[in-house]
Length: 354
Ligand SMILES: *Cc1c(COP(=O)(O)O)cnc(C)c1O
Picture 1 (cartoon, rainbow, N blue to C red):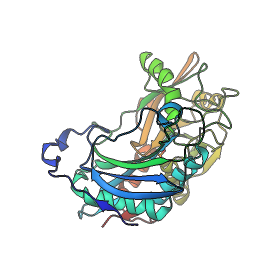
Picture 2 (picture 1 turned 60 degrees about the vertical axis):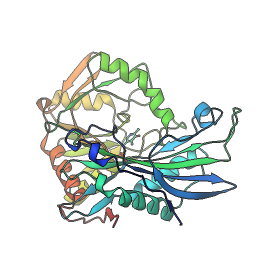
Picture 3 (picture 1 turned 180 degrees about the horizontal axis):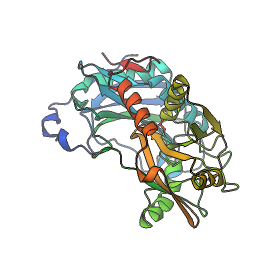
């Protein structure tokens, strides 16, 4: 693939305060763009980050034919820059595209675009441990048409954002509440796709949860509101009597790459692991009996996010005294160790951009 390169006149890098990076607020000098038209992806280019022109009649703005991904690149102690599991994220990107009738992008093109963009902005990859370059590929439908139908034209972009440590004072366990009113995804819906509609559906419930003092909602299945699904930005794991449990992927849950990494490592460590339906009642019962040891969420942004409290209807349970447990910490250290090149990359998960 031929990628045109139009560099910035002057880098914004000197104006960035790398000591106080939040999450997703600062964007690197360049972005990748290409268009789908006439049945093919074309005009790949890396250009200065900035506004893009789009017609107000572009169908994505009206009907949400959009897919995105969230990937990270890390700087190792030796100064090299590597992307974590790009093949898995690409696989999921195309799976989401198929569900949304968006033309797929082949792995070569996807990876070349990621690597070239990150390599051009490699000075934007933070140097501090715990910091990284968050990569946001996304694709949207651009036909100028406000009837409902599959678009014939699309634009694919990649923007990148240096992000700070998710935990400023170490791990802070989050509190979750179930909803008996709202649902995130129903069988046959969009739950397995990384698409904005899933997030739009959860904004109001999440806002209400925050007003009640919780961090996020723990989603239950849409039909019976009985089985645990995920947290909406994270997948979830429970440690019960030495066994690791996580909801099986039934089409309504997003197949997290961090979830997959935890499963691979748990198997490697010989921790008994069950992917199956888990009812909220089973977890409350385990807590009452004292066998619920730890709960943690998994996602690219935070890697591992310990859960200190869960509320379901009238019952609240505290997990591990509201403190981060040893297993959450061990997974966090193993995964970040591999990402920063401090531990052997025994699963061949990291791809260098150099
Ligand atoms: C992205 C996402 C996750 C986490 O997936 P990772 O690949 O681990 O980042 C979990 N749930 C939803 C709904 C998501 O969009």
